[in-house]
Image 1 (cartoon, helix red, strand yellow):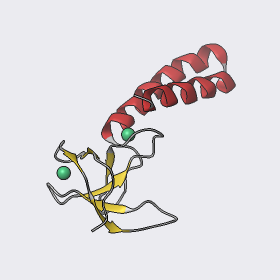
Image 2 (cartoon, helix red, strand yellow):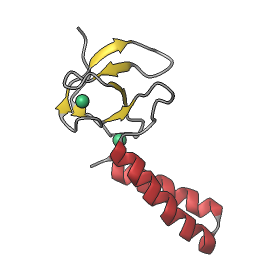
Image 3 (cartoon, rainbow, N blue to C red):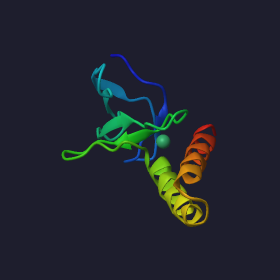
Length: 103
Ligand SMILES: [Zn+2]
Ligand SMILES: [Zn+2]
């Protein structure tokens, strides 16, 4: 059984090495937590090795930590955008997301 590298499961909060349920080249591989058997996907943030929740209706793009970060960053960018305009705000957003992803 092929496996992915270890990361945090958003359902049971364990560091797990998920099993690959379905290998996809275009979309993300569908994974399964070996602890709680919930569906997982690799987080889309560069440098992040945690997992996003898969659900029947919607497969999350980001793990819970990155979702929170993106939310905070969006709030910060919203404030910044009022002052400096959209172009710079986009640059700030990219920088903050990349900085957080490196941890
Ligand atoms: Zn789990
Ligand atoms: Zn993440």
